[in-house]
Image (cartoon, rainbow, N blue to C red; front, side, top):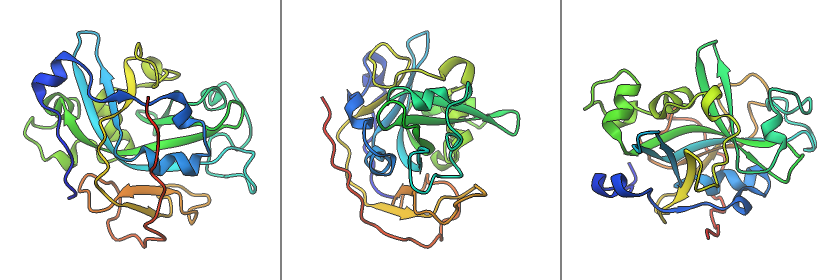
Length: 236
């Protein structure tokens, strides 16, 4: 597994790690934002001040209906609906949806307002609040880190993310209980593969992961289409 910086528990109790990722980071094409998001922190803050955080190690890009051809696997491919409206709003907002009637998945809106792009968060490497994240998953507190948030639904369970509580939250706002933050960790190579777990456009190379990270979800022997991705970004 690539070395990933850990957050000291005493520091996490006092303040959130890193710096907020600004909205302009997300105001770009989804396939460009997705690899840049790897290595950033997804931070959930509870009402009692507790902090749960995981490093984003795997994502998938879903393109808006303006794409040519439209992305048939995207929730936005038929245009705005009451369910997907967050994705057509300003960039940098959480879009939550339910699968199998009981599990949630977390996405972040991208592109300019009205274009409907989004990024599915597929896996985190826990870095703060590991014991609580394991308990949230129904695991022993000393469970292997790779089991805690390696999958879209697992990461939502680990952080306690749900549609009723988190859909529409601004992840670029300091007042939000769900934020994307940057602690400067950029020490792993990005791998690009086809998306997984979907029925349409499965061959599109829009899944991005940190090479060698043990918390990445899904098959470990997928054919890599590329290992080059632009992760340059600016954080204020």
